[in-house]
Length: 542
Image (cartoon, rainbow, N blue to C red; front, side, top):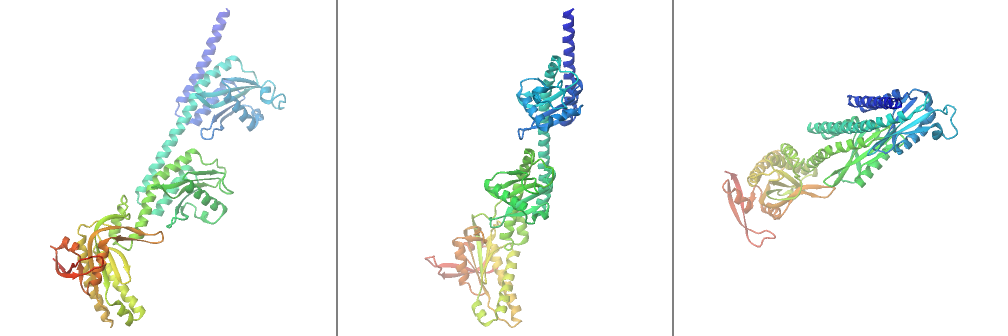
């Protein structure tokens, strides 16, 4: 008889274990968010064991702290534990090796609170799967937990641990999806080819939405590379000087100096959280991308938030680099090439056009003859007006024919052909522009003569050869120019060119001799050349 009783008891215990396993398994298999799944599991435990309260704590993988995730309260007296004591009990729970029974005295000591009856019993359930994941606390007053309860709870824990892992996995997959979706959205914004500032503002709005921030901002170094300046921000009123703004500036400078992300929670008087990540391009820090939260309550930017910010920056760094390079290109070449040429250059974002390189080019110099005498017999304002009109005419002819304006040196024009745009016919273009400049200048002289002002013509010199071309200068000022023997030769040929002449070097002539009508000019002597030089006076293009 005793054997049958024991067998019936064992069978009943197995049925309880099987029931709790099936119920937890069914909850795990349900298509519900992790928070709902954990809440349903706690509710099942509370119902099946008739607890007065049941608390579920999980270890925060980011901070290592225990977070209270679910509360099932059937009796108000669970509050006697208080936040601090319940957290301490949860810490004890994750340290035990198995389901453990505690009495009231082991929890409160000999001085029990009036609200806690001596018969109240507690159960600590550590949640472990290779490593501690969290713990469950439950309590019951009506009757103590027996050995069967403990056994069933051990079986339940074997299912709960995998449910917690499922929760972590769900969260990780959800965050990964959110990260990929954010990257896709930012990439789509980049592809819209918006103006630089508009692109930054749209991306910052996307950032604020992705990580629940109130303010997104971008700081970039100024043109001199000395100071960070606010380039875009979602709340312009924040730009007003304030301690919080100074704090953001200080943390941004810290980020660029260390080359690491900076994240401060509870950072300032009005700011709850700040994070910023340096923009590093080609091993050079060019600015900071960041986000702020200024509302309460705010738990601080999490690891997921930081990962999202890094993901956005990883998509924005090349876009910002391209935009900055285009700004630099506009600054250096905006007045040197035709707008249509500049547009083509800006579209070649994969090429650093301004870097130094060796290239065979043609260089043209056009110099106003008799400008000293003109200055002596003209009023200053008349002289300036004439020279400005002359330079304007020469520039218009030059740009219209695909030339690049290198610089003005007083009343001399220096121009390039074959850079920055490659031009196989650079020598012929230079000769053609030289003749067109002479024609345009003659028309200009006739207009001034009608006003009673007589001025001399221009002499033009052209040379072709291998030159180093690129952006040359200092932080304060740069020019897109050339260095090399051909540049010096072109200047010296221009110096001997008479009014109305277009003289070209031997190198230029060799490239276009079948396409021009010229007269050789022999016996020329130039500094740095120890033999007579022949140049060619171009009359017309064949």
